[in-house]
Image (cartoon, one colour):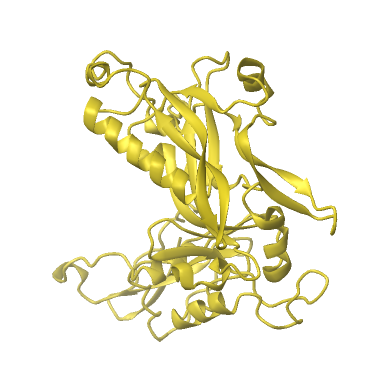
Length: 374
């Protein structure tokens, strides 16, 4: 067995089923997302071979019991290069620091000005300006609908997105599929039906359900319009649903399900304005994936910071030539046995773990500094 490899399980993620498509505007020649009245199987053509090109209903099962695992929901804003900002608890957003603008053509913001003033203000308020580099992810309070990226003018960049993950028993491939939706009606309807099934059957995983795309009359910008949203349906009787709890297989282990980090890397280009390119023109694009600044995250969460180093009384002895380790100063007191052991000082995380070097011979019992290698 190889720990960390042999014990890892992954359920194949077979692809996305879309609720819209990208079209070209005849006037401007630009792409825009357009909703459909049927499922789009462009990315999973083998599903279309079973259900046809204009399918509005598919047979599914939910792979797990935890709704947050198979129907993750969050506010999300994407650039063309990937995720820019996300909030999945209603309070704290995780955002990528984009820094100052380089000016046109990479950004509409004048050169030298912050491309994300709101994010820079949050970083300054937390005192993390020196710890968070451009490209790092940081935490900040989520403004919700008051965020400028959530406003409908000029375009709504941040949307509530639900990632619905399920399996299709009638298709000759084993794994899970994903549908992304930003529809209020779809998210509320699916959440409600999932909980109703759980109450009736005592579980939701592995119960045969039908996923439908149905029409609904709604008011959009003050005008009547036909929209389409998702719904779940159980095809049997309530009595049969109540009797399914003990007769079904166990759910897929949560460790085998696609992770949130994995699904976050897939751009929902049929839901975002110009597939994220419009937001990218405002806050810039970055081809490198964002990284998490652990030290900044601990500081933002209120974790105790490392104490400042004690004032030097004597410089540490020079290290032998050719050693690459950095010295760490510790104080030796006259009577170490008489004093209780103190916990080790917290240290900032290093890129790579280093094996400790052999300890130096103990010094005479007088107060002075010793070089210790880590």
